[in-house]
Length: 117
Length: 131
Length: 273
Image (cartoon, rainbow over all chains, first blue to last red; front, side, top):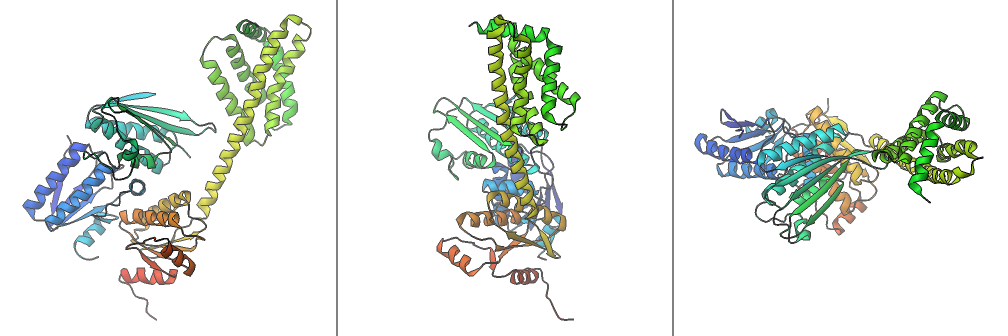
């Protein structure tokens, strides 16, 4: 099972999803992030989905859940790099991912987390 | 027509990739490809999680005015769906997350057919046409 | 009448008289084509059809019928695209009967065989009509799509601010196009604000409102905020009476107000020189 690596850069946890995630890996990522948030007391999480071609309801729910979990650790999550085709499909599916903030790319995501936006 | 077994999470990923290639090869736009693969992902997962495993079949079809399309069949021999109307309503869930799967998938494709009987399995057929 | 027997006999007859029949058939079709297709091309098309017809009649393989209809459909579509009328195409197919008849006219025992062939050719000719209208419908659909594309611009109003002036009805087809263009522009310009102007949208009912909400939802997934501008007084009244909620989406009467809001949110101010 593929494990998505979590990078810690300063007070931010950075996750870049590069591959077609299988359900188990998705759940694993959620657990790993919760662990990292508890241990590092990071104040922000950036999830980069620039390379992700498909976000279905399962992955969508995971993203919202990660947002909620982060908030419990007083951290904010920003989802960056969503592809237009994915955004349109999610909207059609009726998923607004309202629990997570979004940005065009990691740079803008960082601006949000560092309070510049 | 190609047939794929759905017995594990890896198989769901394989189905996605297969459908993606079929969609791209038959002239579907990027957005339409994404919609079809996402629908396939929902349906494949349902087949695995709710249907106890099953098969996916991918067929390339042609409309009367020459447009190519991709047709997908998902079948399982699982417990079936007792209330189809309810299952197709947004937000409905059995707790294992069946909700959003079927109704969502339906919105992403051009044609959608569902046949299911309690105790006799479920089969879902969808088509997405190139424009 | 022994259909299989007559078909097989006709298949044999067609095979034996291949050159004469195809030659005559080509002549007849070329006369109607009036130079729009070359003689060689016509001959080639007819050869293909002829071979398939013989295969179907001889009952040799099951795929022949499917291949025949597919080949005929493609021929019809090509003719339609080249400006032929459906009658011209059908008449071309029907003239096979004339070509064959000229050879069998004197042999009484070939009458049932000819009749059988005749009915088959009639079906084929009728099928070309069906394929023709389907092809025309596709052309109309393609043209509508092209028109839609032209009438759905997405412009950059300022650094980081995109404008989407909607003109005409906002149906699901246009909504799809707007979403695609808006999102692609957000990515290429790195904008984080979009102003969707609906001054040119004649009616805003629940369906249109849903389309607008979907578009805003999609833009938000890319980190952009949206403002809806161009709300006319009557439209405002309709929206309220229908109970449509725009929730936390900012709405403004004019594009100018929306632009000012977007600039303010971007931390910008317009001052005199």
